Image (tube, rainbow, N blue to C red; front, side, top):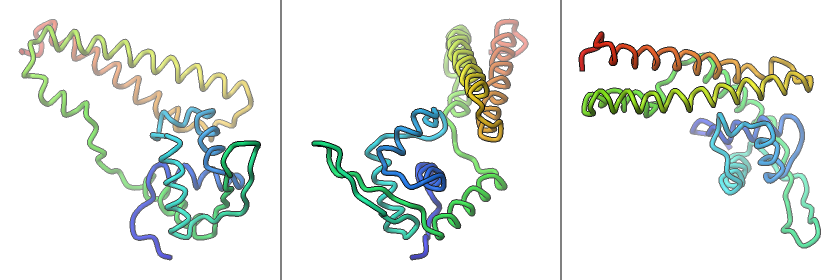
Length: 187
């Protein structure tokens, strides 16, 4: 069956895991969480099961076995089909080559920040700076641990990209706070 709409982020992650080996959705969830992929894609067990089900309906994956462990429910293991590999390759190529506006919330908040007093804006931005620094520190620690375990750098390019973005945002927000405080940006 021809797929008419692009793969969702969770669909991309599921297909990427199935390229490695056949898995059942709960195992996929565990691997994604172990790899901290929840920093780049929203992952919940229920939505992952639904995403895999949609991939099966679309003819991108197929069930290859069912197992039961004790009193637990049956778990269906899925494998990627050639159409799934083609869909994954095409979607990743599109996402890498073509910038899209994802409409993040922060720029909208900045657009409306003039509706708040300058002191409040600076206080909120300074709070954001602390949280951004925590994210950056956690990411740097995670990358260092992954490299120490022998994870190849090519598997960490997304983390490198996120570090660059976090560093840029930290610098920019710090400069904005300074400009508001100094009066260089009249409020």
